Structures are given as structure tokens and as C-alpha cells.
Image (cartoon, rainbow, N blue to C red; front, top):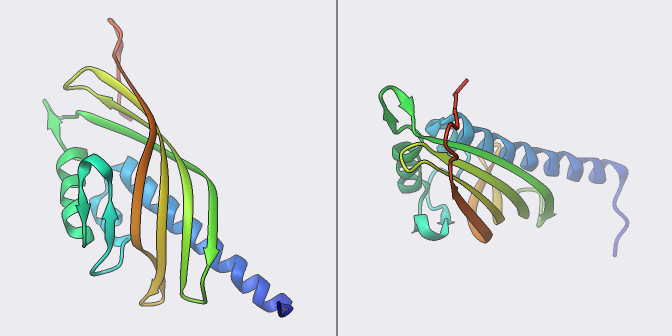
Length: 162
């Protein structure tokens, strides 16, 4: 194995940090109900996406539309689906200056005001990343649910949205 210079090692750390920032931007877009930023986290064309029960896609446009229809759904002027995505344990592997793969653990929580339920899930993400137009983007994203629990919201539960 060839010894990497300090400059190369710093550049690698900067790449990894940019990928982490991309994933966090994606997760914040999910929680903020921001379909444009959600879509912009993927390559322009040809992203391979596998979101289990939500479907498998060969481009990000269809999943962005599904996200839009679920996240922006309102009843009586209130959002009815409230999500919380917290990702941690990133494991980023660089495959060159402009490609990488990553694994993440996601703690997901959703309140569904139509069904009156709260769902908690432990999910694993497996991603692939590339540089497109000078910016890191997801070229593939697969999620796999490890476990899930759905329970009714208790009587008297008050849900407010900030």
C-alpha cells in the first residue's frame, strides 16, 4: 500500500464530510417537507432507488413525486404526516475522487394524523455517491427496515406542528 500524503488524506476527509452533508441535507428535506431539495440530492438522471414498500425506481423523479404527495398532504390546512429522520453511524468508503459508497443507520419516526398512529422504525441505508456538476449526489439509495412498530396515538394526544 502506498503512503498517502497529508494533502491526499485531508482531501479524502473533505470528500467524506461533503457526502455526510449531502445525506444530512436529504434527511432535513424529508423532515422539512421540501421536495425540491429532496430531489436535488440525487443525480439528474438514472438514480437507482429501492425504498422497499414505496417501490423501486430507476430515476429520482418518481420517488420525489411520491414524497410530494405524502409529505405535503393536508387535511383542514394541517399536514397529516409528520416525519423525523435521524441518521447516524455513517460508514463512507471512497472509491476515487468522484465516487463513493456509504452505509447509514436511520432512526425514523412518523405520526399519521389520518390513521391516528405513531410508527417507529430502525432502517439501514446503502448509498452510492458520485460527483455531478462539481457536487456530490446520490446515484443509488436503498433502504432496508430492520424492525418497525406502529401504535395508536393515545387518547388525549395533542400533536402540534411548529
